[in-house]
Image 1 (cartoon, helix red, strand yellow):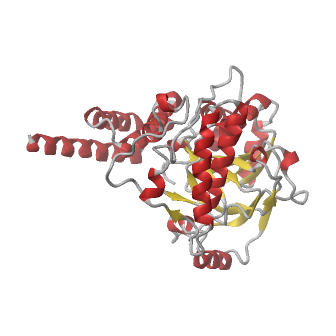
Image 2 (cartoon, rainbow, N blue to C red):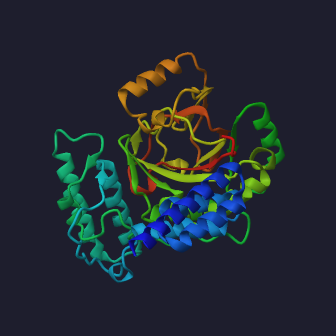
Image 3 (cartoon, one colour):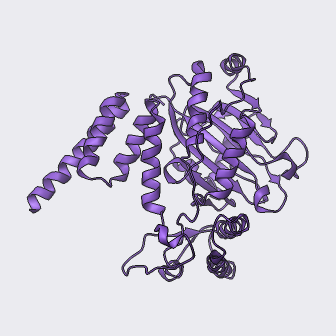
Length: 395
């Protein structure tokens, strides 16, 4: 029996490696076949599932990609339906739990979102008990004078949530629209020409009003923000919650309407960030792709930053060829910040001021950062941005 199991493991790993080789070579149909073969043997293999989703994206098979990413997400984050009708802490099995981390802003944002959902009637008022648990945990973190930028929670702290910590409390897919998600009045040919001359292009009124409202509603109501930063923002990624139908409709339309920019650069990632009301935002970094399209979805009336500010700062320098991804991972570290400041000392800046429904399309390797901002207090008024990353195989 052990030999049979070992043989299956070898077979699954071999199919995964085969899929990876096909994916790297741009043989996407072959990659799909290899990954699906691996998953027929081992149905829960996250690395193979994730790469299967990426291969589907490269083939513009967005519905299948969405199924893969949503399946991974819900398997990891879902709470049994019987425990969503009302707050009902469950038994957490004995044994080691996966590592869990938090920042004070992550907990505060979770508290505010649950209160917002109760107010809207999306979840039972009984979930005020879950708010109380988050408030108690927040008080523990705030009372620790030696806490770091991100706190690893003890198993006792996680178990106190009865299986609800970092889980989906409310989620509803936002369907694709019957009509276009992109504003059809935009001159896409002119935008492509601008990008060919200078790889930083501002696009005002990117989305239709219906699409803007739909994405905003999804991100305000769906409890999908699981990652966090010591810079006081939380994030949701394509493989961990931000995989609604509407965002994939937008990606497909962008590929269709910007063929000279995106034809050979399939979608590779999507994320959304939500920030504290006062923040420096994301520090200088680069994206691991070819073309980045970033846009904001919070109402202009919430922005209390000096007019013309609170948006995105672009530099005319690309990431250094000898940098690896750790420069981004540790961008909040003082040593990395000093290194980045020295690298950018002579660089010129282009500032894209904040505006709701304004997008900035740029070459992903250009260094960029948030501009410091101040938004009105209140959950609905927090600054939110969405990013779609497109990546050519050779990048």
